[in-house]
Image 1 (cartoon, rainbow, N blue to C red):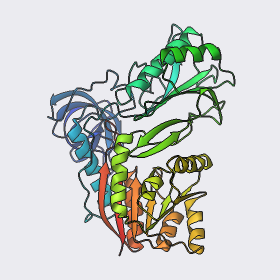
Image 2: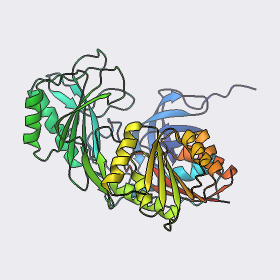
Image 3: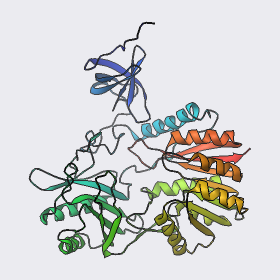
Image 4: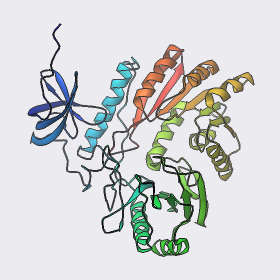
Amino acid sequence: MPKQTPPVQKNETITVTFEDLTHEGNGVGKVDGYPLFVPYGLPGEKARVKVVKVKKNFGFGKLMDVEEESGDRVTPPCPVYYQCGGCQLQHMSYSRQLTMKKNQVENVMKKIGHLEHVPVHEPIGMEEPWRYRNKIQIPVGEKENGELKTGFYQKRSHNIIDMESCLIQDETNDGMVAAVRRIATDLGIEAYDEESHRGVLRHIMVRTGQVTGDIMVVLITRTKELPNKDELIEQIKEAYPGVKSIVHNVNREKTNVILGKETTVVYGDEYIYDSIGDIRFMISAQSFYQVNPTQTKTLYDKALEYADLRGGETVVDAYCGIGTISLFMAKAAKKVYGVEVVGEAVKDAKKNARLNHIDNVEFYKGKAEEVMPWWRGQGLRPDVVVVDPPRKGCDEALLASMLEMEPERIVYVSCNPSTLARDLRILEDGGYETKEVQPVDQFPQTNHIECVTWLVKK
């Protein structure tokens, strides 16, 4: 059989009409049936595209000029949107973003989970899809004149895009980063250089309590010493008198991981506080805490609805983190058992339970797939199992443990539709019926979507 040659060549400029979007938000145009993926293209648009990469079954293009615009195209309000890798969808109307995310979930349910019969609801979006993030961790670099700069990395690179503001961040975060950058420049503190592994200030992290207004600043350095520490602290306090906590974190490693293992509180408290609904949380520099509390409340309300708790149930929360979902469930259940592999998170979960005077919850450190069979051996029979795994989805052994426990209902909270669909297929084959999927837009302007899924025992 003759070898098929792609109908386009690298560096060729062609005109295409976009028919669809990928799950990353790239436009899909076809040339004689050959798909070309082009960032910033929108369905229905006719555009001139430069071919930048050609593979056997598909290629990639660069958008040169839009000849016929979609009604869904908007002007991105961020001046560095097309350079920065933080957001992917600012060129798209918010209603189109939500449609794209719903289609993404439906596609994986069909192609990966073979669950085309399962209803996927319209995503629950935000009334104001900007300024929602309560945490920023931003790399620090140096300009040619020696001034410090802060900004996210350019797409597919480690070049820092110098920026004054990030429109999906809480404005307090922006202000704090600008203040620390200015103060550190004035005090002659050097930025860390990735290539030479020299210099001092690697990242600035700011956490804010959306409800409380509490502010924590974390300065991440390569060095054990924080240069001009006292002066730095005084000037940060002068710039933001409301700051509750200043933390120094040391990361000596040559790594992309942001936080190191050594953390010292250099001013104020170890924790700041925030609330989701009527539950308060203590948040440390290292705590995992949802970055969009407004939508987290929406997500957890839906999880509670699917758990259908009447007051007499036992709930197991796998991947419980600092106890966010566990404490929501404990308000309506008889007993909740949380399990989490990160020891610091388990300590925080116990503190959060005490903070809220919730005593019908127990937290255990360990791998859920190991702890749950032990619980079963002790005679624990949960009515509901809740899982909220990382992007890679549930461990196969954990899915097997869930099936062995035979809860009446499973509530699966997911940040990755593909691994969700894969795991739902396993749970369906193990005797559960997927009733419905509710996407919740936790991260407007980006291609990420969270989902809450309701399963019942067949």
